[in-house]
Length: 338
Image (cartoon, rainbow, N blue to C red; front, side, top):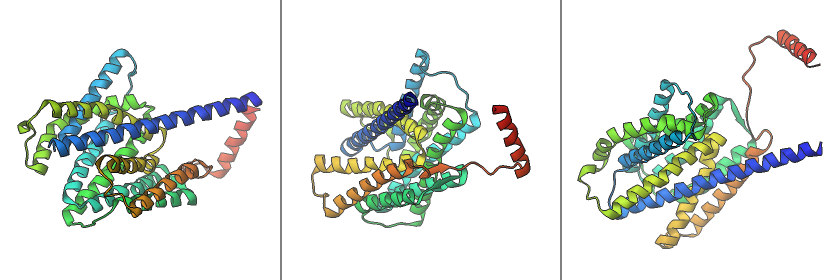
């Protein structure tokens, strides 16, 4: 009995260690790519975000091909209809976020990003029959409140900006939900799912990216003045993107899209802190620190509340078997086990 308890404890500790490692991997790569992309776009004027994302997935595709050649990725099946559906959501998410940032104020853009959490909750409740405890719901609200306090400033919206934000939020939530759904339904690992979807995303974004970027910026990617320093930052961004894409799939696969969104706001806090450290403390004031503190408390509360029994659970679908027949089947199963 004692050895069984020890075995369970070891498994729990191993799972926790892997969970922490996955989150750390995602946070480091996500914050790293944000800083590199900010330098690339703000300092060196490479404002072609959609094309850059296409390059990210092209690099990720090369990585999956190399790992498959080495034998680290096993052959797996994923229907083309599922791949195309996933890529459609993912590409609408990328373009929608870029357009939303361009057409909306920074404040409304941040509100739109925050709204992805309740939308992801809605998808889990409707599609997966997930139920949340009161503490889990309150912790999510606390995270939303804290992040809103420290990031939302000027808020103005127009009709086309609202439509862009609406498309961006729903496509992003659907894409992240689909990562977890496909891994669960088809028993796919993170590398396998990337291997199925990254090549299609890379191809579609590299074909449409220059046109989308020209529409958004009125600048041509082929006319950009490429220098050795800007090329270095582009290559660095693509290299970090491999880890960012992989870590996102690992985290959503291990947890859910909602957990990824809630705890993912730790990246927002870290970006703010790093911004204050590297670019001055003029934006660091009492209400920003207060908002960060509330958000961090909410994240810790969410992690604890959602891990408790009943904190967040997927309810089984209602049985279509009549109660009398179900009782007979249960009795038969018990007899067989005896």
